[in-house]
Length: 369
Ligand code: THG
Image (cartoon, rainbow, N blue to C red; front, side):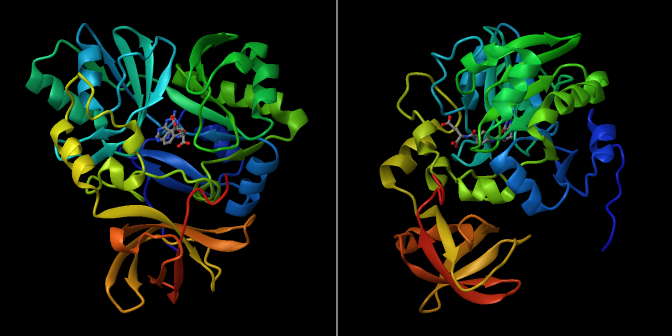
């Protein structure tokens, strides 16, 4: 194999020393920052998440901070989701689209005050988009990337670890709601969230100099529960139907194609970028859709590039966007972006993977409920 050079452009995280000590074995780059990919092995890490609890350095979930008198106006303009009733202390999953309705990002919005918002972003440069919009619209806002780095605690035992560390109040947090908390001088925002369906919280560290201190405290609180270092699990997220910007969707896709139509209030009173395009797409229907796919004849652990799909009579039929072997289902599962005529459950397609040609059958998502 080869090495990827790490320079200033590829930022390290406040937890870097700790994850190296914990035995991180691989990284990817996300929002120009290192994101651990695995510690023991992808599958061992997955089982710790499913059966217990794991802690993830997800500093790369960067915050785009929008403050100022016109902050609410700008955030409203940036998403098709109706956020008019979002309360201070509440978070919401908010797709961001361009004027064609193309997916730019799918962050979580955190409303810290009436004039103070964070967009906890996936891997595209939302701050630049926000700055361009603010400039073009003549809005009175400040946009920046604050010193905030999330540490996720995920798994069936995650709440117990966090309750031992932070207090029983964490049980009262509803999904995507958050509270500010000072942990012995470590400033945090604690939210019920995280990129898995195993439950848990994310601790947004607000002082990067205290990353290793926070890591140690979580690891210590997690000891009785056998907490392990981990990272967002490709296996778990495909099993449960969590889609990834840049993999399962790009700016070429609209939210209706990827099942995010339910977050698009195209007829809301407020104006937003992409409104006319999404109204038209909703009325006309989509030409392709993201579907589940099962590859019954092979055991493939993953693909690094989109794999073409064809129909049984040799027509182009889209592509596989993400793939994994599921240890719980004991089969290879995937997502595919497929022309609408091939999206019916049970449709038999052919996948052209880098490991050969194989059958691919359209399946509902999530694979595991
Ligand atoms: N946590 C934080 N920031 C993030 C992510 C995160 N930024 C990058 C990426 N993940 C953003 N994308 C998502 C995608 C899905 C979800 C959260 C962030 C998610 N979805 C639930 C689901 O699909 O079932 C619930 C959505 C809902 O119905 O409201 O959790 O993970 N801080």
